[in-house]
Image 1 (cartoon, rainbow, N blue to C red):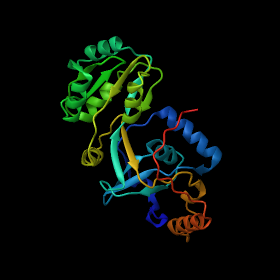
Image 2 (cartoon, rainbow, N blue to C red):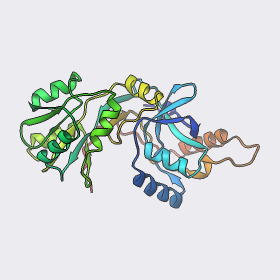
Image 3 (tube, one colour):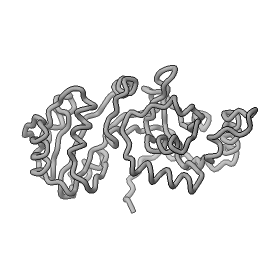
Image 4 (cartoon, rainbow, N blue to C red):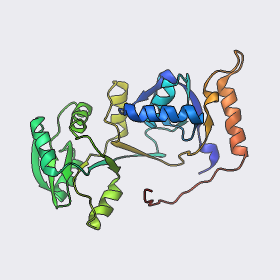
Length: 271
């Protein structure tokens, strides 16, 4: 992938639409960190979906923190959506402090319809949208959660039932690796279906949001550590065009020849 394919631009803050909820505590922590560093390390990723709307595919917390800081313009890496550069997957939620019994009780009290399945059956029914999600542990059985409409609201209600405590997002690859090595931690794991880009666009334009940490957009050529000075997001002089100033900064950043491209897939242990 050639660096000229990177589309890093400033967009008006009012143009951006979130497709997922944000955690206010995470926003506050990031807002404080941004104030201290005065740098945005990783630009959010967004796609234009209407003349007056761009959906934030990745970086809802960053976007919200910048808006809270009063930034009228936000730097985003623009991609086509749907498009070949973006793959849409889902995260699973690992709840190490919530047993299957406790989770079943919570779902039952909340009025969700449930069914007992094998893991194979659950995965197939999730693939065909016959389930809203399913829960599993280290056994070969699963608890299917039957769908209800509207889907974003049902998912928010489901995630809202989680007990307070640790929540770990894991990919389908990580989940498969843990299961293959019989290393799935205690507790329970919620597995969500794969969504389609048109659903994300439709819900975003309708003002609906999915719970935080469910959608997983994999973007080819994602820009990391751009180290964008926050000063570039605020107007300078009355006659200065912020977009021109930002483009000049980005061109100079590229001329520094510190840009690297990593095409390989990687497994990384968390510190």
